[in-house]
Length: 107
Length: 193
Image 1 (cartoon, chains in turn yellow, blue):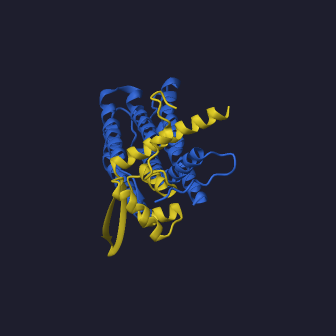
Image 2 (cartoon, each protein chain N blue to C red):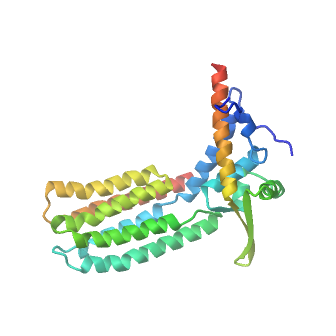
Image 3 (cartoon, rainbow over the protein chains, first blue to last red):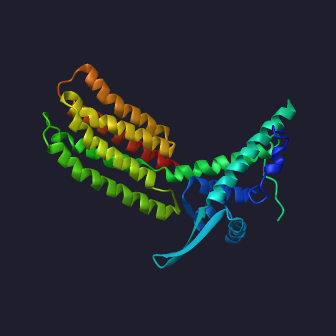
């Protein structure tokens, strides 16, 4: 438990606390933007699976999706929003705290 | 939508597995974004090419060389970074790198104007070393940090030894260090690809 008495597990965001969505935000937090193909390759996903998770993140306001034509080919670029970066940072902080709590309980 | 658990081997907690997952992906993304061999090779070659223009007593030859070579090298690096990012499908903001490059360029030009003697010949190398330290911080690259320290230490060493005309040996040493680091980085990137 924290100084405020709230267990860190309550600060885990259901939108972010999912392997694929956490991975998408982790990649986008490091980069300014990534395209659909890069994310699909990095996370080893199918098109449909990635689209579904991107939809969840977009609906939450955590990513922005831009569709463009480059050299006559469609290309989808994904950016993390300020809210998305903050959500990832909060999730990582909660996980670190949770890890500390778990380790304390073991000892 | 249900939240599936993170895969984690026995004995590793879910938070640890999730944090490992984030770290691993960020490391891979940083590695994809952190290709710096080309800029190093370009500026290593340009530094070595500048040696014949390094004549003592404040000759204007070297500022003219860098007035052309600096922006040309920067443009080549910009083109390389843009085409690499388009090919990979991932990019980061180039603004901090552009601002650092511009400040470095102005400092490398301006500092010789306010110094004299042996220091005037090598003061730009201090600015370049500081610039590499900033690039290292922006890229989170220990390699660039070491290079920055080496590039700044070489002119300091030349001044301590008391060389009368330290410009050419300093340019030869720092240019070689930058070029060798660039070639080694290229080899490392090719191996990990």
